[in-house]
Length: 239
Image (cartoon, rainbow, N blue to C red; front, side, top):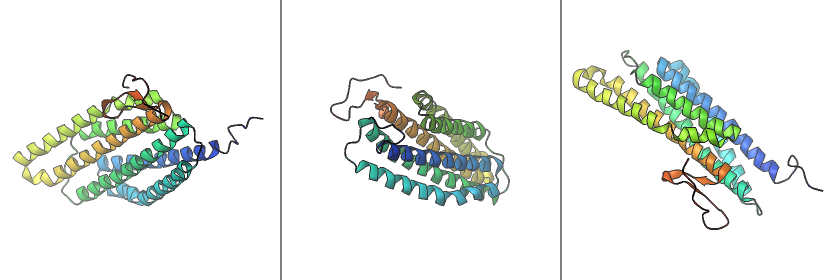
């Protein structure tokens, strides 16, 4: 008699791994969102919530890595299960880095609170919205196992880069005409860099979701299906 997926001894650990990863993804999304809100509001009290969340994220990273390594040590894993575990290890690292970047943004907020009040650069508002959307879509693709949603993330990265460049240009202009505003401008520029890196990690997660679900390798402009049992399969168009 066939064993049902709900009780299959191989399926259960994989399901637990995905559940751990989704739980971490949700925690990271809440933490990053708190950091973005704190930045836009220049609210150090809200930033303090980000600092409190970091240890829990680090603990989840270790738990997921340990679980993934135990799964990889098993023999007889199906190709899709191998892709899942490999993608999980990579996504886990990206999530932890997003948590670290949220802490970096919170530190910028604390620094800004100690400076004379300066207006938030106008480009920072749409930039945070774009980063928030990329993060939400990439983690949504993971949670819903939705490759189409992952593909949407890959098309969004350049928008964030443009906002970063505009904020850096603004800082250079400020240095020339109002050097007294430079310290705050530098903090905002650093925050923009942290935002760009969060967007990069969201892109990485979307790429790894595609690898897990479709066996599609899209990093570095490549678009091919990987065959883990032999040579790469016939090339497919990049997403």
